[in-house]
Length: 322
Image 1 (cartoon, one colour):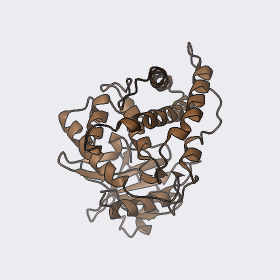
Image 2 (cartoon, helix red, strand yellow):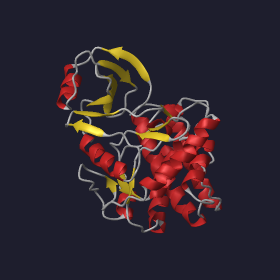
Image 3 (cartoon, one colour):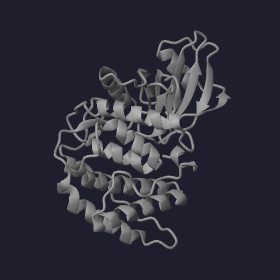
Image 4 (cartoon, one colour):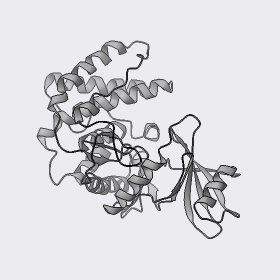
């Protein structure tokens, strides 16, 4: 769930229908729009009885993944993870509990945010202890599209190469694809674990003492935990990644995991680059290009690092973007 209350809105009938179907009295319910996601329009809701909820409605043309979120929520709660509880869902809407606290997304990060990131690393380790049966995005029964990590890793859809002034994106993406195909057999062959799929600070809530909520569960997948760490590191400032890794591992980052981590970073950065290009967000495309180039150079020189050399500016708004 994207965080950030904005405007009190007059409820659409679909919102009222969803609340009623979930068993709540929608009389005098107050709806506040939240920052929109890629697939959903979320609203904070306070009912006349004092229930604090979130209602999401599916964007036109987007794929419904609320059944997946409901499945993931149940699995996470069973594992002791404070995930938002899905109370009711349909193809077009979802009603879930509203997590207390605030998201971890101060700009720049404050000491309390770094402490929360370390605690988020501990929660993430618990999440990654949950095994699933397959790799890739999971359906409403927890089944993914791929039986092997290699099949999942190389399942990059064919897309037209975006253009950006002064950059040879075609050459860069071809080189990256070659590296990914050459390195796929260096990935660990462990059983797939449950991944959040969009583990960033804005999806993790804290009361400055504990992690109080994990939200936006529609993107869960089965995969290698290193992919989750890689995704966080591309989208959070370096100090936040250092804090998360300190909470996740009992000691230093394992040296034998550095190469797989960098390979996952490259794969995710390519996917993010195409997403930003589809939104015509050239600043973010340039960030992903710089991150890809840095990791390719580090691979060439054998100087791999757990924290990327290039991360979002802690004072920018990039952490609020997908």
